[in-house]
Image (cartoon, rainbow, N blue to C red; front, side, top):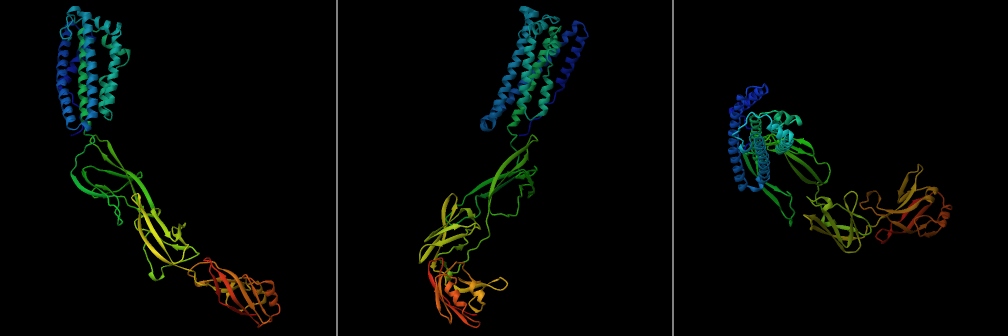
Length: 511
């Protein structure tokens, strides 16, 4: 269906309007009363116009009712409005009919014609003024016309041309309006003027009903291309997960220019304006949402807006790499694991440990600590479609940490720390030195060890201590040594974070 068009004024209507203007002008010039008979001709033509408008309008109401029976949900709103227009138009038309009859009762008395067709005292110039002005009914008529005009304007919301037409057709200007129409106005002229308003009412009714009837397909548009689309909820499915997709039939009109917006910004279109093309480079991981709208010109020239929202997930590139022969974890330290599930955001990944604990670190990795010997099992789950699903697991052997090596740590002449297992040292350096246990520069595992005791042997004697630093007796022994004497540090004991005590390598240095 196409949009409504303003009904053009017919030659007959233009002729009637011209006659009305000429006769009114002649009356104003105090032309002979015979001219008043001309108003009867105009009034008759107006009544014929009203009858034609009624036939046309009743046909539209029948069409409206037929449309409603075929599609009530779509048509009801507009049919209800059209019915209200019919009611308001009939009420004002009936009021004017009675208005004319009341004037004739004053001028013609018992001979008054209820249909205001046969007028006895056409030249009477007092009856219209008495009923309209003296009795105050002209003001009431003006108020009813004003109310009807505003009702029509509201009914034609969105159609400025029709609204402007209604303002012009039913324009009034306060008290001057009823004075100009009825003061010293012959009855035949007053009746013709009122009939003209009845004609205007029926014309406006037809225009408004036609407008409302066309509104039933304002949201419709013709299509010349129909395509089937499958829109899945996710293009990545995990074994055991549920696949879901909407299968839709999309229709487009290639003659229309659609506009596409995402987050308020216009985006380019693709494939001949059939769809919007939204592309970007993902720089952050996580789940994100965006919204937008598609704009389409409607049949009335106004834009229609169709909003949408969507979300997407960005994950880090990941791969699972394992060495079955070195599938071990160590007791007492933080074992750092990188765990991910392809296609699942990190916030939806869950890790649990049978035989230990797991916690997530700030860098996105997992820290696993062991609390039993033998083996532990790391279980990885993911939150998929609102439920937790096991994605995989791994068994790891539990081992104690490898034994570290013992080092003598001191600062050289430049204040730079040194670690040695053999070599030459000065008396001052060894007096300030301490024993440490570590994996050295080539360490693969980070762990802190504490020296719990060692024995120092020189040519002077043998003295033990229960820490990693020289005690007073050992320091005193160094004062009796001379250059070239050897110092042996042996029986070195250390305890690691796993609680195991180790015996470490001896250290020999020359003074």
